[in-house]
Length: 297
Image (cartoon, rainbow, N blue to C red):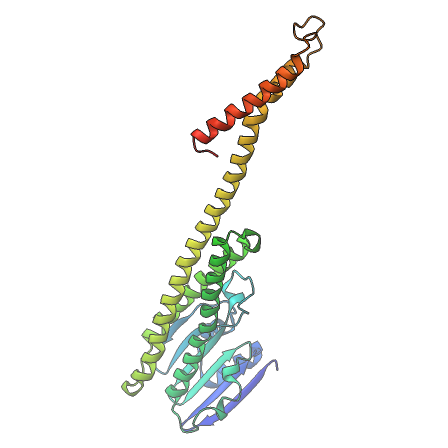
């Protein structure tokens, strides 16, 4: 539903969740709760990167959750992820987002109604970070599969374009996770919630390492793919060169005796034809033995 505003009372605070709000709706809400205009603008901008701004009365945070299908080929932050903006006050939490995230649907049924505002914030943070787990697993498995195909030299099943997109997606995801890590690290919360927030930080570290390893594997895979492709091309050129080495002297002999001059000494020689055939065979044998000696064949 476009322009949905969902308000819930949870324990001692109010949570207002805005799904694809219009400018009028969010400006009205900003005026009611005295939110900064520029922060409102940031919350509406689809491609904004993760960040945090902390003020005396509230904290403004933007995080991005992975929303693309793992098999899609995308190369931009906006195609790969979607933004969630947070306005965190003492007794008010406002979240702004465009897609209807599964972890925000019917959240009241999955959490304790007596939770605090930081419990809910960390709960949402955890789901946002966890959205990168499935893509990390898929990329790792896909890299292993492509590696197996390449070393079996079935290159027709490997697309260099897919490898490029996979590398781009991994690079974007890693950068977003690093930005998310920096954002979460700057969040000031009561000491009682440090343990829960540390779990989110640990998940971020683990995912960043997984994506870094996947990026390295993809780079290695692309280099391997190019090397195998180059080797295959070299094998083809080698085969053509060997054929040329055999047929070039034979073509020369055939062309030499194919000249239609009237006075050629071998034209009326009865043994001329078998002699030329024997010469060609002998020359082919010599070339073959030379290739064998040089270990080319």
